[in-house]
Structure formats: C-alpha cells, structure tokens
Length: 150
Image 1 (cartoon, rainbow, N blue to C red):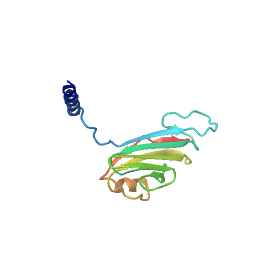
Image 2 (cartoon, one colour):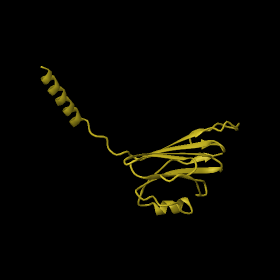
Image 3 (tube, rainbow, N blue to C red):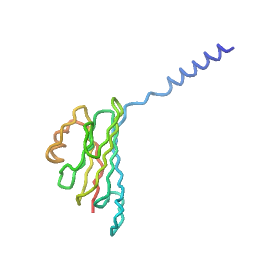
Image 4 (cartoon, rainbow, N blue to C red):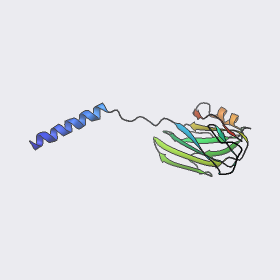
C-alpha cells in the first residue's frame, strides 16, 4: 500500500508539472517613487509632480541587460543605472532576471523624464536624450510619463 501511495503522489506531481506552465522571461518594467524632502512648499506633490530636493527612486526589472536613464527638461542626462557602477545605482541579478535601482535628488526645475533601455548591447550615453534614443532605436525602450519638478 505504501508503494501505491508513492506512485499516486508521483503521478499527481507529474500532472501538476504538466498543467502549470513555466514562468516566462521577465517583462521589462520601470516604476517611479517620489520621496518628499521634508521641506515646506506652497502645494503638495501629486501624481507626476515633485519639488526640488525630493528624491526620485526608480526601480526596473528586465530579462536582458538594461539601463535606467533620467533626463532633465533640456534633454541632458542627470542620472543613470545599469550593470556598470554609477552614483545612486544598485544593480543585481544575471541571466533572465535583473533588477536595477536608481536614487537621485531632483535639482533641476522643469520636466524630468525616465527611460529604461533594454538590450544585449545598450549604447553608451550620447549628448542628449534625442541622441540616446536615436542610438538605441533598435532596442526596447520603456518610458514613464514626465515628472514636473517645481
């Protein structure tokens, strides 16, 4: 009877294995969080609005190498996070599950834009966001709505 129970358990495990599809590759994602600086302002930060000195925290996941890039209103790079070390950046994982975290203090007024560039060969940053988008046009690019820094 014990052998029959073992075979029944193995058969059940095999059926579950066949019915539960294996998890696919991680879809690229980019999420933003704004942490208030604690300074007094005339209004309250809301969705898509932040103040100077607030912290912008970006988290990304990808199945391939990727890089978070943040640009100011003029299209100038103000922060980045990829597999290479950079200020405020932590990257972990390898293979088909990589995570990236970039923390930066918002200093420049105007619109701030965050992108996630995904691909085996992410090109180095160019002069502006337009240059970077042009050089990465064959890669996958995820973006967030701009954040207005007051």
